[in-house]
Image (cartoon, rainbow, N blue to C red; front, side, top):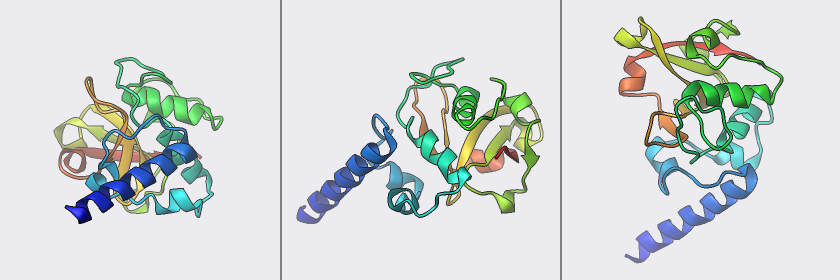
Amino acid sequence: MEGIARVMSRIAEIEARLQRLSGAAYLASPYEAAETGFSFASFLSGADTGRGQAVVNEAMRYLGVPYVYGGGGPNGFDCSGLVQYVFRKFGVNLTHYTVTQAQAGTPVSRSELRPGDVIFFGENGGTGFLYHVGIYVGNNSFIHAPHTGDVVKISRLEGKYDANYACARRYI
């Protein structure tokens, strides 16, 4: 049990540091980093100062904010509202609609994804109607506002997200 207590203490320290650096109210889960496999190392060290990473850092400020249908932030977001709100801070004006967001920017292949790229998900294995959007954070993970009853969080690009991946766009 002593080892578990040390791990829990370290997680709390990392969360506190992330909150101070990002301004986030709280992480969606105390084990968010472990669950997603996302590494906060470059975020915490400030190693990547590119515009894409700046977008990711801005989006992380809203980790834990509740999902609100039609929400445009900052106290509640739906998926396209989060993307619109974050990119507006970088001078990119997007609509509050996933389909038209997917028509903007430069297409990016999945193998060329970089932090700050926007990824879209569609019905029928990604070939049908686009129904969801998130911001790629690196390490096969993305930040998004998933659905009613959930909060802005980081998820892995696997399972249903992998199966329904449709396309990606780069706005900056």
